Length: 166
Image (tube, rainbow, N blue to C red; front, top):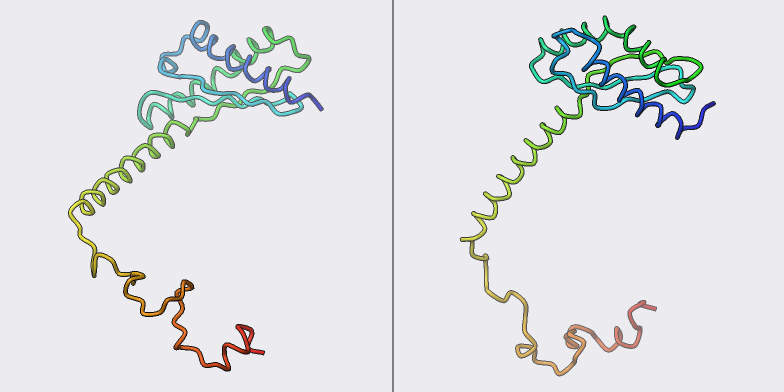
């Protein structure tokens, strides 16, 4: 079992090697708008998953996936030459969904902000229902007690028994 720090370092290096290989060595026009976003390596250093994004639509994603699958052998050879590990990890490419999720999150946040602005606009001209001071003030109380309880509501027996009733 390999060290997780070593796996992270290897994943970072693989992402750099693959990005450089796509830019300089692989001459496929379908890979012109590809960005390598991340790479993950299994703890045994046998398999590497490389995440990528493509600038374009769904057709561009499909053609890029096909181009990456055809270039996997060249890129794996390059990774093996430049990493120096005993076993060159197998490469698999996965389209990164983080940018799409971030875009969706931004849309939801903008929608929530619009709803908050609408509520604030409606609340700015609103007036409270009922009286301005719905609570009784101490000047209206007839008793001189400071506990806020009207003593006339209790009988002498209640006062002798106490709050537990026993």
